[in-house]
Image 1: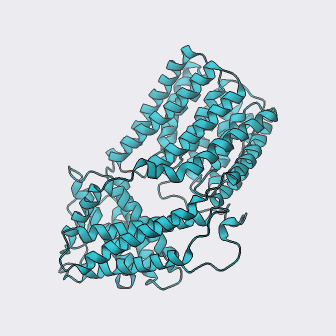
Image 2: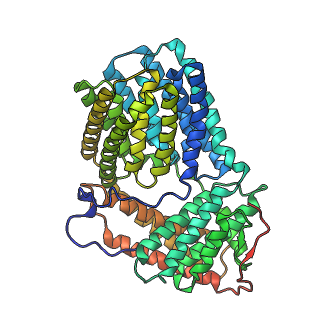
Image 3: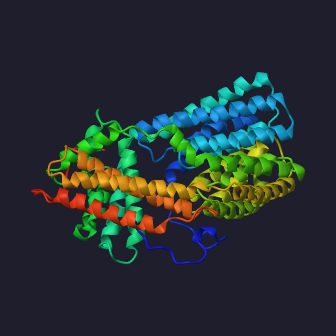
Length: 562
């Protein structure tokens, strides 16, 4: 993960580059799961409303149904809690929006409330790590609800519809557990093994070894986060412990790539992707220490809430200001749906300015292309409400299937779907919808991005120094344990993982700061030295462990079913 000091010149993060912004990536390994889940969650409520002739209520059921998009990478024990929190967060935002809409029709007040809601939703999603699709879906629904005529007496029934659909979305999200109860954690472990194999294939010095190492540590850290979120005891503990041993082997490969067989790691990964038994790594004498190290990590105190909120303050301010100004600008232009501009601005804000710029370009390109798709399918969709619902379901599937390739490609489906949803309450003139959507997209992207430029994140550079210090402390702690001929059981394993996590956090912090404009210069020399010394210490911990005789290095299988 270490890297040389960048050459002099304009920093990468301060260029308005278009290179790679629209480039397509390989689809997500589980692209079809959120796509199918969204259709399964949205279709029944919409079809029921269609049968009852009340498609005008679809906004409220979709508030709950779209919660099925979340938490697909989480283990099911964790997913149950995350999905419940997403549903409650969604309903909370909708409740505020509906009550506000019932009390006032002042568009300026509605936009202001929508902007504040967007900032709160952005912060909650980032702190709770709800993951893709983040705050955008929450903001889209609550902002739209603000501009639906409402009375206080209608609010409870409309929230009940959202809660019922949310309960159905929770069941849809949890249903795969009946077939593969350990699927997410097996998948995360397999990804860590594959990433480690890629780095081992470079032997630590070949072409592309620096990005391969960074990707490897990120995948291993993600796997640990997945496994450490699971209960350490109970009927699933045996599977978890078997997967932990495999992640440790991925860590060993990252620290000692020249001594690792990449094909062996890939073989284990292939076995995990199936539904067979969890591969056994071989009964190394240090396995007990590894598991004790995991338990030591679980006993560690979590990061205080204040420390997690601090870095998010600039992003929250950008969201509130950008969404408000975008909505006000849309109102000034006489656009009838200012919440589209608000949602466009809310979708822009990422970890730093460079990523925010990229998202702005992707949003504009995807929305404009999506408007053209809407113009093509609108005549067919207007033939009947059943076709309207079916087109929305197809576009819903397409959006989730394509968005992992690139955000703009998913927006090509999201935009016409959002336009068709507005017609659930009645026919809308396509020309007017197209014009307003294009104007709101351009206004939201421009004003939202300018707000991000105004609200700088000057503390990003100082956080790099803090991350360097944390990595140095983790390295020193591991070094002290290495010097101890007989450290406490599990202590060295816990220190090794803590050091790996600190180095991963350091690289993430540096990348975020490098993409932040007009901030402090990144102390590249300190970063490089911290990464190099940290990786040397990691390698030493691996050598300390592998110096013990390992009488069984063959690949066998643990008697653990998926």
